[in-house]
Length: 325
Image (cartoon, rainbow, N blue to C red; front, side):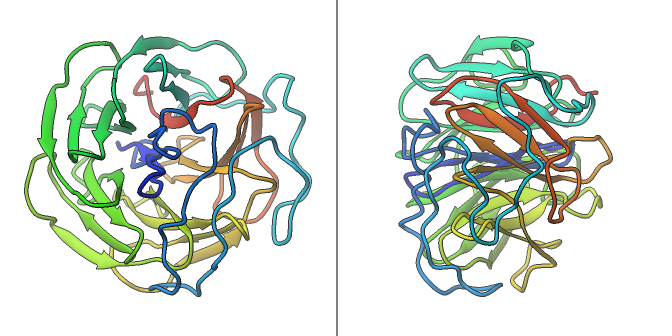
């Protein structure tokens, strides 16, 4: 299973943040380096034009409390933030947060309001948090990426301690991404270069050259990773914050999106995960500092299926299958 994590931009690191039993994606914010998604999603390094769908040129907005639906956004359907979750689901991917000043990870095994099931520290320095199933045991665990040195330090349990894997991969103003690119049940690393929309994916968590390289993207796109069609292989996507447009592709190749739709309102941080455990990764949004999660069980326009509060302000949102269920 992989973890979905969103990736962000050079100084904005995303955690690929996508985490389900198949994909991986994470975000971070201006290098605060995921040390707090409490700021804007800085996609200013992303150039205009690109491959895939038509370019949306406006830069991604900062994450804050949700406002009303903007142009092209999703209206209605979300419940208020303070109360309990509407229709929480156990099984599949669930939520978590990373707080940089304290290098604290707080993971929850259900998509409901409540306290963390796991709390521990792991990190240090200007890092981007990442999540993935590094050993193929069906449980997503933690990792850290250091942009200055392109060093990845991955851990096979959600506990404090030294890394189980440490290697160098990537470089330049890259956004780290994670996914199961070859369907072997193990998540591995990748890089997205926002200035050229170049993806460089590697099928093992080791130093070396990319196994797959291609261009996909346009405008000020936030990169995403997930298994959008349930085939066991994670593939790419993008979110355009100015229009709330999601553009998902079912293969790791250049080309146009296979699925395009609008979802979101206000200033959301995009998320992905297999929220209902059906093997398909779908979308969600996180609003800081409320902190409200709005998850949807299909990659289509519509209101959230699950809405709840978890975490606190100035955190990096994470998703993954923390208990292997």
